[in-house]
Image (tube, rainbow, N blue to C red):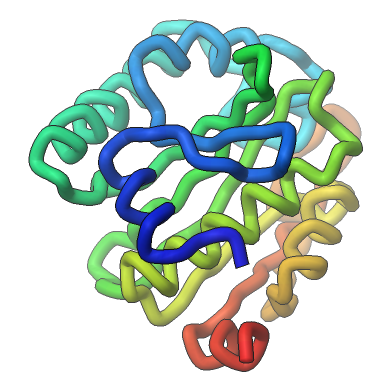
Length: 200
């Protein structure tokens, strides 16, 4: 387990907490936006992202409300509407991000997502982020269902989910349009009961 009552409270207050011995994780802030945009400017990163590449203004208009809500939530000792977390190493280098997005009209349902810059691939960071976000969802936010989806050809992404205890729950054929053809969309999920079984 990565979280306890002390680390949950510290994270909620906007502090960085350990993700691994070499990495910390904290709620998003304004200074993180430039690193996120740089990451999303890499075609290798955006290969399996349906929302990228996009103009910088699109990223700014998407992330700025999240940053503003997070700043306000920290000031009131509350969780943001869509907790978004940033990973950095001991030198302060950006190593990735992950988040939980509330599913509209379905209280207690959240979707999990993560993106890493190319220099952070292959280090187990996506798995660490996913485990922490899953714990946060069930322990601190009291959700009853965490869902995720990814491209069928994104082997690293679905292996991350499976390594963290998520189960494939469905497949939507030819959902994503690629430069040459289409790719399926895979659906993954975990319930609070399944999480409790994993952590017993």
